[in-house]
Amino acid sequence: MRHILLPTAEKLAIRREYYIRLLTVGCFLFSVAILIGIVSMLPIYINARIKEKDSLNKISSLKDESKASGLLAIEKELKVDSTLFTFLDKISNKVHASSIIEEMVEARGNVTILSFDYATVSASSVSVIIQGKAPTRESLLAFKGRLESLAKNASVELPVSQLAERSNIQFSLRFIRPLP
Image (cartoon, rainbow, N blue to C red; front, top):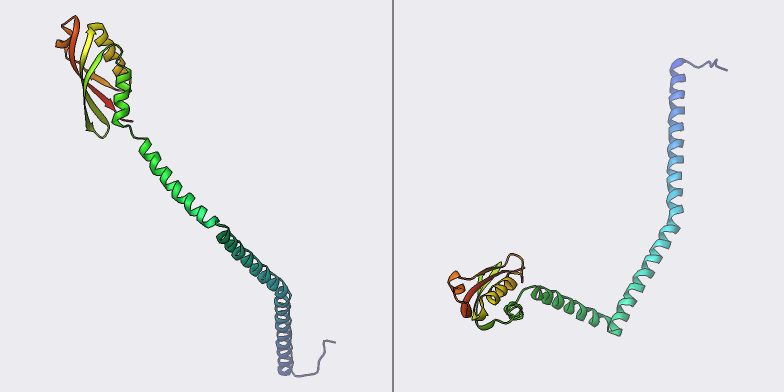
């Protein structure tokens, strides 16, 4: 069947026309397949849109219910309380002068404290000058040791001249306490 009696130029023209028709039919089938795919996705798209609208309606109704039941006001109060607690927490972490003086009074033992002079040396330490009366030299040295043990890296400056007496010692010492 390969013997066609047409001239060569016409055979080539018919073959070219055949390939063009074949390409046209292929493109048509491809476009029909895409159209069928789009049409088959349409119900899924419609279903998704309906579910989205339902979800948005539920969210808006929950917001309306929360406004009606007062939950929104409670949430605002909780936010305000939270900020107050964080502020109070920052304040409570600081060491106050009263707590430092209270620690020193508790550590005094049998030493009589007559006065305090509280001063902030730097952002990381405070200085307290304590004047008082100690019954003996040993009680004054014990008081000095108790003050040094109140805080890590605390130091007590006690002049040696005040240790010259044996009893009823009038003293003035400087307590330097680092802040946490």
